[in-house]
Image (cartoon, rainbow, N blue to C red; front, top):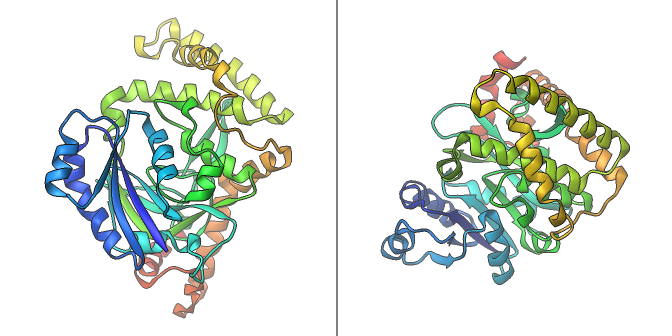
Length: 363
């Protein structure tokens, strides 16, 4: 099997110098034919010249800056059955690729024929916090939130299972990625498009798997945050969450959540505008207006199969309390086992040791 490892870059020459060596090492240790490429979104900082000098064997695709949507064009051109999609601020463990692709690898015992995407265990680069990507979805005052940092998530960090979404690092079945339409340009310049893609996969009858044996480290917002700043990123997340809901959700219950939540958030904006700091005034109303201005684009991108049953199942499958309960039960099970044969959960020795060290605090 062939695997293509693709790094998305925009003005990230220093990030490539820091993190690309780990990507190349992981490709070399993949156990299958694996090559590395960089998709450069029209950088102006000399990224392409730096790559030509320092990594002449790494293929570079020069594309207009269309955020994650640049992956769409490149995956349509390559012929590798599996592609690993990375931000440019990700450091990989040496066996990251080998582990991450196993559910997508037809010759492997862990192959899952319904899997269209896999997500790794991701740690914050400069700290011990877990970023995910064992992701839950929940409603927060009328808006959908996808998060791997829900209450009670800790026991499930090292347990494989399904996930609602992924973020800065994931592997995809290339053909299914293309069939689903890839990332939707509706959400440009970015935020929430990964959740939209994963939701469309779920609606199509597939599922995404969380693979904690594949470990990476994420600096976080190294490119996007530098361009838009914290307030700009928050505004895009609010706007695109509304677009995600208007595009994908149809059941009466979810429509009711949205209407009630939007009304409550507008009222909160009104209260804050009376004396709050300028940056917080009408924050949600401005995002609502920006989303409304794009409403005509809602039918132009890749659309999900609108199955009300699958819609309800998606939110039930990835309830935070459900994932937390499953994680707690697995930790209790491991605590009762005196033999390493508990590794049938598919965690390797190094991961199992970290898990067992966490048990006294988790049980």
